[in-house]
Image (cartoon, rainbow, N blue to C red):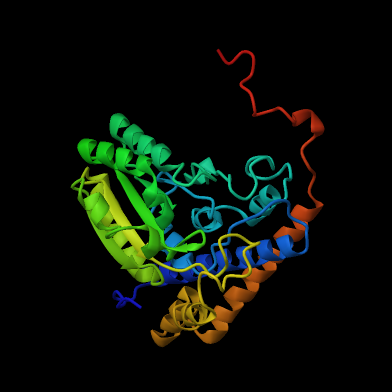
Length: 333
């Protein structure tokens, strides 16, 4: 882990909150996976397990007024930005109390009360939204910052280069966060991405950084510094976060031997797990005991299980809403 700052009550609370948030993401994904395996959840979903330090490290550097855009693998971003378990599970199960009234599902969760402009099933689909959000901040003279999450595969989308060009020309307060988990669907990143990902934004004069995405303190320290600079008009910035997804591309991708090895997965899970390693650092530094961390995990597990039961019992939207939010209302003009 990154070296500790001088321990104060404030940053000790920050450390424990970051640990709790990472545990919350893992617990949510464990429950979502079980819902799929038990045929209680419609459609597919894309697990974020293994990448928790990225979402938490970044979102802990933001306020509710700051905004994010997310991806098809977006549960972790949503939870890290303050989403509620019950509303999240209701959305996954198509229930009325979900964030989008059960009509968005796993890949289209938005929570504007916490600055989450929404997950997006289109690869790279939120890049324009994030840059537009940053342009809004610039035009209104606010200090808000927008973070755009996307995967390494999305660096093949032309839209990224169009918006980075605009953001660089106009010095927009946006941070492009590339979660490089080593694979674009079923293909290793180095087989489809020529050159260095970090070099691409640098061609536009955008400062780019690479960080260990399994180290929540390193992610948070870098992001906190860049957010403050972006508030001063020094943006945009680009971060390549080196991380790993424990599951396949989606929950149905269970036979991964043809594109990655069991040995590789074992190394990441046993040696690079962001929650285990951060927990070990917290105990080594005397910030929390093993018993205190175990209580956090138990409490979060109980919360996630209760939220699932709540969502399973919740109501579906009424059939009369089948076309609501699909077409603009007649008086929209």
